Image (cartoon, rainbow, N blue to C red):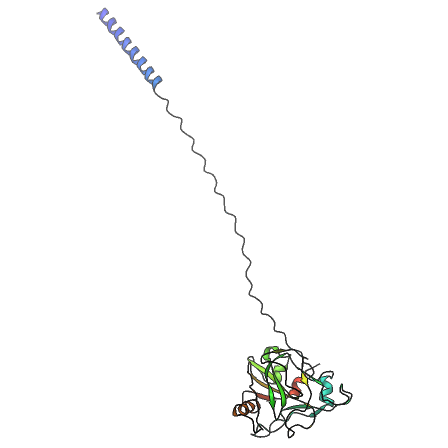
Length: 266
């Protein structure tokens, strides 16, 4: 009995010993569990820098349109002297319904001490304003003549108010009785005080007897152009007569007194 118990004890001990060795062997041969990798700390996302605020685009400023000065129509003579000493016939508005009556402009004639020995003949005629050529030609009433246009925006300060003008209109000036045809093309630019020709007595003897400058002013839509005009002559064509009446009597051109414009000159 005692022997059997002992024997059983030995067997159990051997069994436990063998089991332990096997466990140690398995533990030694098995790969060690990998160490857990550290979870990387999240990197901070950089905050984008604010873009510079663009400067506001300013609307382009309007280019100022230069206004014209007022120049004397006769070289070497101040306007004040012309109006006080050498004005031989003033402006006279048409009388009644007949728009051909009256005197449509100013006449400057004889003076003493002038560049031509006391006589106006041959004195340089100058543009009163910055302008463009709107017409030229010859007829019995005006002789050799030149018509210029100055738009409303280019007029000297206060000039538009004199004649009740508005944007889109122009002031037209006619210079008459030049010695020779005006040497300019339609639309050609003219500067204030630019020489246009020379005082003469061109025209029919019924309308002109002595050398003088005849100056007219009228208001009309901007951009008008005049074809050659004539009337009181057998050779005048119907087209020339129509153009003459268009200038003299139609609503296309409103008659005005040149003295008002010249009176603005300093």
